[in-house]
Length: 285
Image 1 (cartoon, helix red, strand yellow):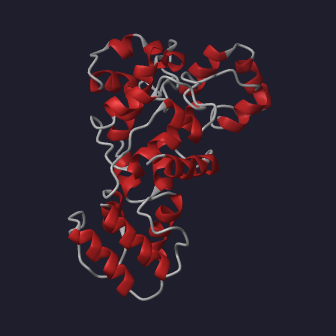
Image 2 (image 1 turned 180 degrees about the vertical axis):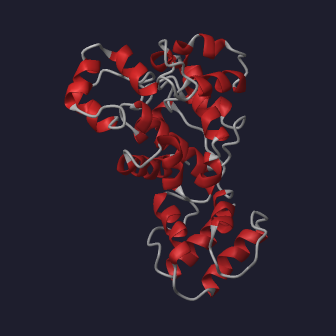
């Protein structure tokens, strides 16, 4: 596919969206330029040329109409298979990344249908952000009263109410903000036991129950949720969540922000996620 990628880089350069080398190596500059074609207002002929290249490579089967949408971007991404990762490469993306996770990524991404570089980069960026480089595999519920008000305003109406719960410690905090939802029983420690876990911080008894079956261990993970802090379960739970919530679809469409919203429920940490995604594109080949 190197010849096709060079042709696409050359076309992007011709219309002024790309200024790098014509080498067939797709890093963040080329990828960002391609995604910008969605808003390109110039002649449609270069865009039709790109669609023709993609069609000839048998990754695009839509109309040759010069309209770059999800289908064209997904086709472009399918020219670039997901590369292998190593602990060393992960540390180049995020210098404090924990070791011991690369093999679990390489061994399992195909099972959960992560097939493209775009998809893998989006997965790594979000998981590295959520877990502090795979170092924080259980959610820390040790919040100050002020921070509780900022993060969970729905559950605390005043500093006094936040202080009362904070003084009781992390278990009480987790049970207050997570109890009675996501499958958690409000009358026991489900909120704490099924707090965020793994590299993507899977949360809630329902997710733990479904994930446990989904990764092929029956009820093992649900019965012993602390297992999610072990590297194998930490990574498999993230991959399960990624597939179940169709993150790959939107990653391949180039809609990185949509992926972040699926994982986070909003745009918390979006700037770091974007930076990590860009770094992954420039590190992995």
